[in-house]
Length: 433
Image (cartoon, rainbow, N blue to C red; front, top):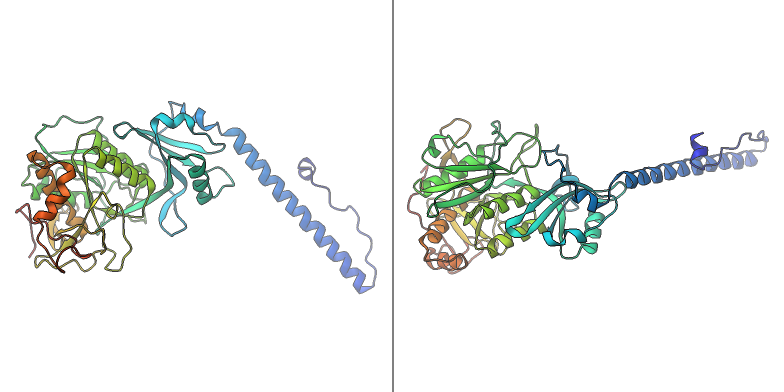
């Protein structure tokens, strides 16, 4: 009955008795096998077509989905996959960044709108889409890039911290609505990282304004963000207000990760909150959405600082540290020698102390020793925040000021190991040596 409904002819009802002649018998058997194979192919093709038609009929046009103000934006389950280059991504998911004024121009049959986030401070809207049945993710991205010119379309890549990160501890995923009230002359530093243990002894004299931007279910680790926050607090002599944009989540059996959409949302929150300096001690692949939102932040007078990564001297450039507008920072020890696992290249702008430094340990509530480029970039972020707070240095002149004041290391002049050299301020630095 099922075959008849799909328009597939019935199998022959009666096969003639096989002659004894062996050659004729083989031919008949081949005919039977061919008939069965053709029938099977027809059934599979008809079934696949029926499923695709059903999906197209049940998924509302994109314009209708965008108009649905009741769209659920709750944290969702995460399923891992890889892109064609082997970088980790979210399965079957595409992220899109579009000028908010151009939303009405977007149309597509079959894609499912997972979430929409308006990024008012940078004039953009981020869409998270699920691919339609029968499509491949790379092909869908190519198709959307071609049919939606002027938008950014990419995988929802996964990023990791640029240092060791254990995560048995979790923080509640609570977000602070709107921009909190902070004195205009406060030394404000934003960190896009894991959540922060705000009541740690090393942060008791520091105000931490926190919001969660991890879009997926799972634990909210504290280890790395707490360490970075403690370095901001110590380097600023506890004068900084730390804006903690938590982006990392962790599932059982997997390392903590942060997705592109979380990073984009976090950066926009820091821009909207008026945080002049944004530190990103995390690394991953290049992504069109991440590059664009960082560019918008820089255009609006914010400075983005990032760790260059710990994949070794021959490691490929990692992002966001390798983006041109970002100030990429490597790590050196107390003898001003580069961290042996630090990435190298023309994207390394400056060096700062980041080897064998004491940081806050959220596991024990005390201190521990850590090394990595993650531990160096917060120091440079604090120096930049002090420069901007003085009112004497514009955001566009920060890089030039840092170059002029850097201590040259390694080969004379700029080099791919130390960049322009060691950023020596601020004078307060903790060391395990």
